[in-house]
Image (cartoon, rainbow, N blue to C red):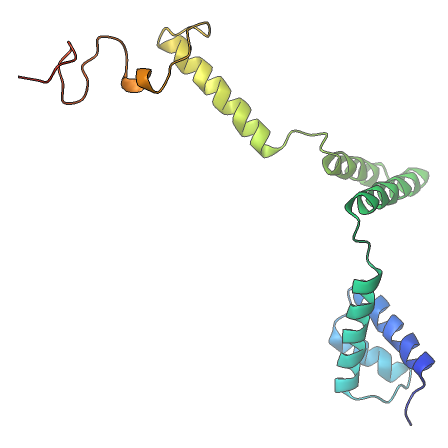
Length: 159
C-alpha cells in the first residue's frame, strides 16, 4: 500500500533525524523494518535524498546569524556542563568558543611573529639597527662598496 504525503513526510523527517545522529543506511533500514514501513532499499534512498533536500532548504545561509547561533549553542552547552559539574567539558567548550571568536592567535600570526623575531635577531647579529633607513629596489644590490656580481668594487666592469 502506498503511503500518504503526510506519512512520507514524517518518514523523511525521521530518516533525516537518524542521519543527523550518525545513522548509516543499514541503521535506517533496520529502523524502517522495526517501524513496519515495508519499503524497498530504493525507497529508503529516496527518503534519504528528500531529507538532504529538506536540510538544504532549512539550513541558515546568513553567516552572521549562523555565527550568533553557534555562540548561543556553545553557551547553552557550557551552562549544562557547569550545572553537571563537568568542568573539563566546560573548559573545552570555552576554548572552542574562543577559537570561533578568534580570541587566540592563529598559526599565521604566530609564524609572522616568529619571522619578525628572527629578522630582528639577524639584524642585531649583523649590526643593523632598526633605525636604519629603508632600502629601495635600486639599493638592493648589497652593502655599499661591495662588488656587484660580475663587476668591480668601484662599480665598473671587471678587467
